[in-house]
Length: 193
Image (cartoon, rainbow, N blue to C red; front, side):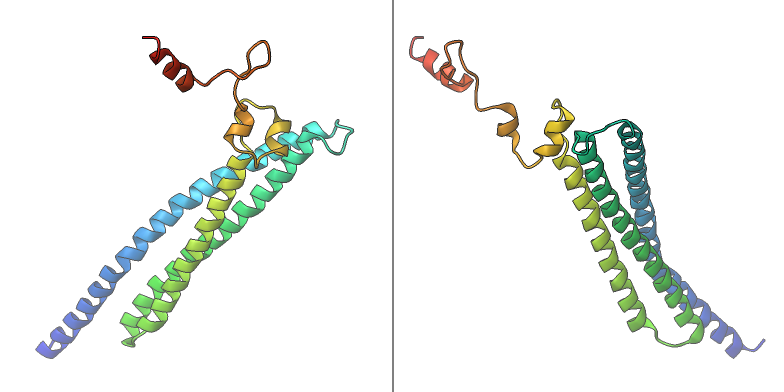
């Protein structure tokens, strides 16, 4: 081997090492995307299990407008949202893989594919943002129908009402007059102490 061949081989090795260093950040992004996909698939599995349970219960329900039907409708909406979120997140992971492959192809072909790789990586980030936005929307739909301590009919038919509407406007005494709130009662005691 001549010294020129050794130097040329060393420069190719340096460029491959450089591209491996560049590919490390997208690989970490792939790890994060994988964790998010695990969370999303767990959510859709719970939605499907609940929908199957409701469908079994609805086989024997004669009425069309029962709370179970409304809950099943909400579950269908949640399933569509989480399915789109999974689709966009997987698309993001695939685009990250293509950008990593583009980095290595550019190193071996001795051509600059940096512009193409940058556009593909940008598309991956856009797909990830859309996927996370849909995931957040599904969480909002799930929590809007969640009211702890209320019957299912209350949860499904009035998810838009705030906390005050669900708790009540204040307590009433036996004769129907409004009782003062705790802070008003404590302020009133301060006058006599």
